Amino acid sequence: MAKENVTNFIEKIDADEALVKKVNELLADAGSEDEIAEKLAAFSTELGLPFTAEEYKQEHQC
Image 1: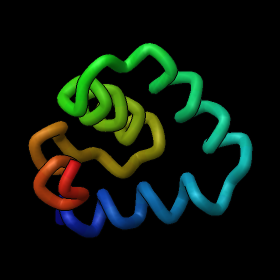
Image 2: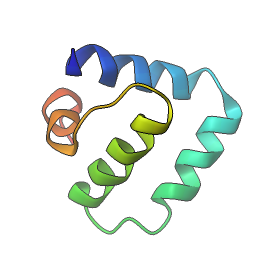
Image 3: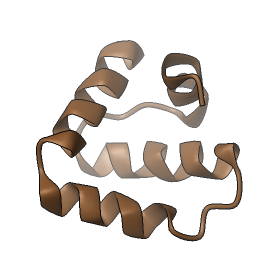
Image 4: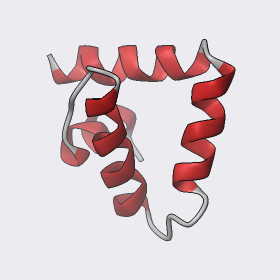
């Protein structure tokens, strides 16, 4: 399920310019790959496609 959520999350972001802008704002101050994964995992819950930072890193190969 995590793999599906990560894939669907990325597809959803790519399809919506407002979400792209929001993700760019969220990641503007991210200092590491771990921080990026944590922020995206938190945002994924808001979009109803929850996954953990570890699941994101496994599926996306940060």
